[in-house]
Image: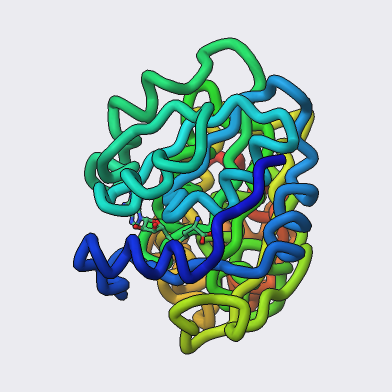
Length: 284
Ligand code: SAM
């Protein structure tokens, strides 16, 4: 692998470009080579596999992904960073612009660069503002990634990998765990970044399940959970009553053998699916 130029070299280039890190774009660069190498390894890239990297920044993680044999597509919003990364890294397909077109759609230029039939992955140190919407959008694609290995704010990583009954278990956990297994892989302390973020960060790895949900059922489940988890601490009898009508709600819960005093936050994915599949009985 080619040597990475010194940090001083990059600092000069950033100064010349008039760059000041933007909080809005989550511009905290991970400098530690051992940690970057570990994250690339966590993704278990197979040689030739397409990898989407969102926000390559100066190209520090990019270099390690190439070393793993990835065919890289890199989408970066900041043209000055893109120029610097391009000046020392060869190989990726570079896309300049926002990775998302609005909150619920991948930018067309990024979508066009992804394979329609072969396996691909997302591996990124994600900006905070993009993390949750991007992961949701990718999981919902017609040809979704087989894996997503991302460095995100620790609190977001804990929500992604949240378990039923915990305060982390919520809509983001469900949207992703419908079709992916989620595992917290490692914590990354703030002192390994420039500038130093005010929060802790963690790597989370998502692996697509062999039996993802049918799309229509997935959509229905997410819609139901969006409403249930808005008032996660209220009883199901009450919240479901407002969604389906009181009689229908009580009858669904009775058919499942559940007390109306149960709460959405206690239910695991299987139970949420059971509730979702429960037909709404006709009015008596
Ligand atoms: N990959 C680099 C690293 O590990 O040091 C930089 C990661 S930094 C946390 C996030 C990067 O995402 C920045 O380069 C930022 O400019 C870029 N970015 C922010 N919002 C973006 C968006 N909506 N689309 C594409 N890139 C974005």
